Image (cartoon, rainbow, N blue to C red; front, top):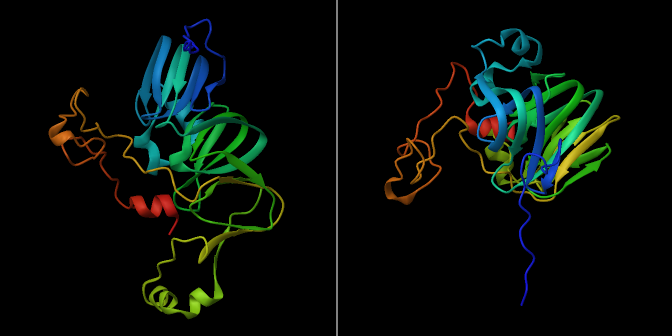
Length: 265
């Protein structure tokens, strides 16, 4: 029985600013890109990585990065070469903005061109890109584009473009029931799309992924506690858990907790 041999890439055969496969994207770097930590799996060429908030690129950061809550999660890739981006075998796609604005879940955004300006969304756990340029984002399954008016499961929501921010919608029976009483006392919403949705109205486009399961949250600044990872330790065979031998990114004063940043509660 014969099987197809795997395709082997090099600098010249990797695609330029396109997908290598559904799970990896190749950036043809000739200058600078903003890159979320932990999303680069390999690169060719001469490329340097600079932290946000210090280093020689303050002018670039001042014009293209306006989200201090997420500054510790991002770097600037500068140089010439090809960057391979991926995120734990989730689906990866690129999108082009043309003098537009798009708000995306912060954990899903992998990278963007400096011609775009990134800002902190008024909705916790989301970031807004404004301008003209390309960005790369991941999703748990294929992304679908729908027009408002529409109500979306919060866990299926990837982002929205050129339309007003959503408001919360709660099912009437849910509000009347036992869980409604708990919410009235605690202010916490439901986690199920059948009880609680984001409601979009007006013109624009809403991006939803084809599952109600969020991409698992990760501390982008942590060293995974895995064997073979320098500084990771690998104690007990448990990987990817900050606080078990890995380093933790310090939380800034007033920074939102992980649950709030992911779900927008």
